[in-house]
Image 1: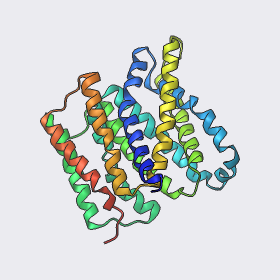
Image 2: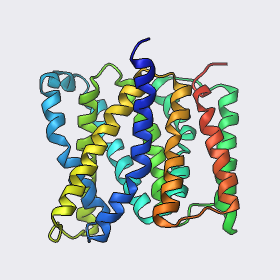
Image 3: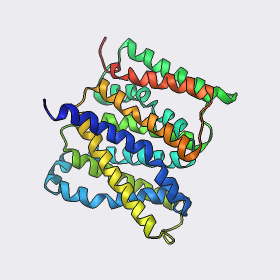
Image 4: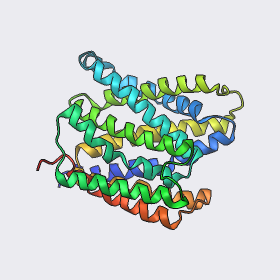
Amino acid sequence: MPASRWLAPLALLVAATTWGLVWYPYRLLEQTGLSGSVSSVLTYLVALPPLLFLTWRERGAARQEWGLLLALALVAGWTNLAYILAVIDGEVVRVMLLFYLAPLWTVPFAHVLLKERASRGAWLVIAFALVGAWVMLAGEGGFPLPHGSAEWLGLSSGMGFALSNVLTRRLKSTPIALRSLWVFAGVVAISTVYALIEGAAPVIALDVAGWWLLLGIAAALLLATFSVQFGLAHTPANQAVVILLAELVVAALASRWLAGEVMDRHEWIGGSMIVAATLFSGRMQQDD
């Protein structure tokens, strides 16, 4: 039995668990006075040297695909920053459910960039996800739109995630480490610009424990990045989607235990519909 048969699902589970928990150490850093944007700069910056070492011999590939790699860096940079800012300030599970509307945005991006045509079933999946979002967001009455900047950031992060996935498929022949390097560099660049615009406080009061926490987050991000890249390359798309949804389960349990967050009835119903739509999203790129 090939090792990838069990290593790939395990790698995806590791990545999902990491992303389901990473919001908490970022919140701890914010409590020390370090803003989400500065934390993002530091954690991704710390992870750059090992990626530079791993990709030094593959730098020639970057010159061949620099345009797509630059686009991936910018899109993935915003995706990761927006996600971090959203889970720091918003309700974790609501933010993640809005993020998991990503399959909805994949269809137009894949059509434009990959010339893929969605099936009729895919449009039903999209409609189901939209209804789920409507139910979840309309729970408090009024027009069903995201509430507050955190939820808008979560929604935009999902859109960026969909676009970065499509760009990654265009770059599938590019080495994983090289793609990861550009993603991490993009996060550093976008986060730095965002921190300068918002006038975030510099790193002045971070103690030794805070620096160890930063290093731990950076290591976890590297592990999650390589795990998901390996897992997606060796796991059927439909199975991968199911495994990655473990992120929601981990986040729901962790947010209840660590932050005391509780979802209401509308959020459970709408969220379940979004999850169901995500489970069927593997059919989106199938032809009629």
